[in-house]
Image (cartoon, rainbow, N blue to C red):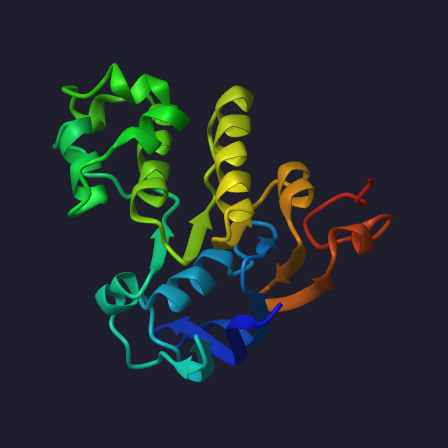
Length: 230
């Protein structure tokens, strides 16, 4: 598979504090790449840089064979890049219906969201901010179902959620990847990420500590984790 997203010697920080120290990373078209690591490893910072929310101090981020350093976040979104952030990225004061219509843009058909998350069909007139945490995450994930991104960046979609909800969300992610969406999934927890991923990167203190296939992690000691068992 061809590489559609490539990072080379990428350094990113907040003011004078550098968080990512020369990251090299390749994402193949149509693949699901898991980005793992403990809290503070730089996972969210990396996604934010790819999405254009943080400037790159040095290095190169290439997407679709072009350097996107100067491309604003809204243009990246228009070209098919979608970030679903850890805090879900919904419009809390709008109804569920209004959120879905915003996500769908010019499309009138919302059925993909209801097929994946039937509960949303029962909450259409409810203010999104009053939904449970799991329902808010389902609503956020509906953006990917309704906007059909070519590159989907997911930041900790399972955090704070019940296992039942987490399994449902990961099933949707797996379906999107199987349909050809390129996915980069940031996760602190190993099991589902390793089950779904084609390629795994592990960050530790802003550097790549491991890169390879999930099967290569068996028996390894990784920063922030116990020994991986498969």
